[in-house]
Length: 81
Image 1: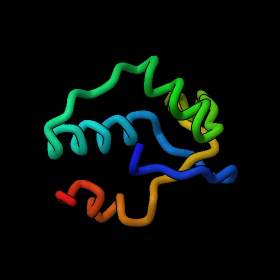
Image 2: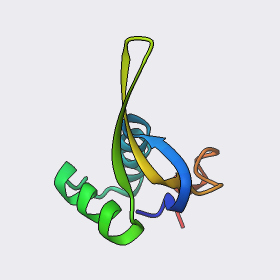
Image 3: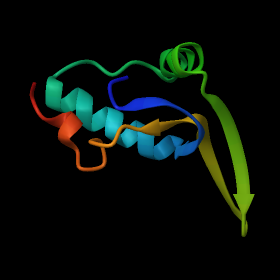
């Protein structure tokens, strides 16, 4: 996962990570991995954990302990290398 790095104080919405990952795979013409593989990689390689929060009646599903690298939000990570 080129777009994340370990950060024990950070949280990423699962939906947001999946969106960025999907764009990355399309841009680089590679097949997306399944949810189980993504989960294994994030937990084993980055020490991330899963979290579910309920705030004002809305459930959010998150990855805890990782953050997007700085260039991801500008989507530089999607550019061809």
